[in-house]
Length: 237
Image 1: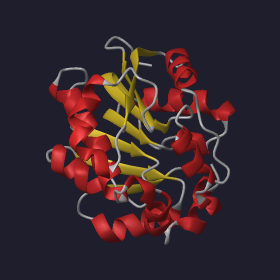
Image 2 (image 1 turned 30 degrees about the vertical axis):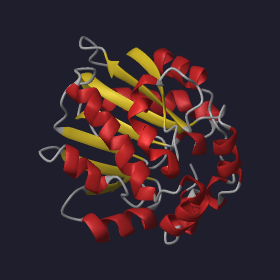
Image 3 (image 1 turned 120 degrees about the vertical axis):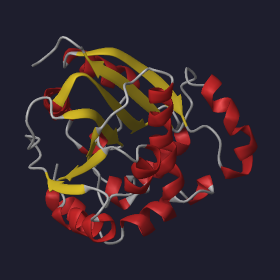
Image 4 (image 1 turned 90 degrees about the vertical axis):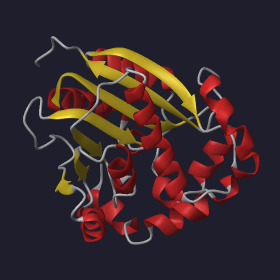
């Protein structure tokens, strides 16, 4: 991950993002809340355990912070990113809500088993493919045994998503990841119960249909997909 590349877009991130997704009819905050609400549902249905320590890996300017505080008010939140500029902006907005920590792109600066849960929202497509296994190894290392992982990525099978990514300035070097490949990398890194769910099917003008999305999670047409997994309860590596 290139720190300078993300520093370059930090100040205009929300504006650029909003412009890029305007066809959806929703602001960036809608998608940020959608993802965290998805995590909350996975916890409420018992798929993932209730977290008290949360890592937002690749948090950028902290767009997800208000929603983690909304859905997990008792949890402590750490926002990790390679972009110091983005972290500074996030800290200025949400200093009392989260800790903002710099990441060197290789080693997460926390001890083994420190976090209950790790959240990675549309980050891995910015990281070279050869580094994905190493990043997932690091994420598993800092999770406690039984801890949960949720990764969201853009769906390369959705043509509207592909077009949006191609037109986005901060995605100029992005390489979209096929869901099956990300699932295999997570398994190879030692995660258990690795599952894919497709998400975000309907734009704003079809929002009345959104309650149906929970029944469509196996249909590979959503704008994004979610991979969720656990670190085995007996795994202390």
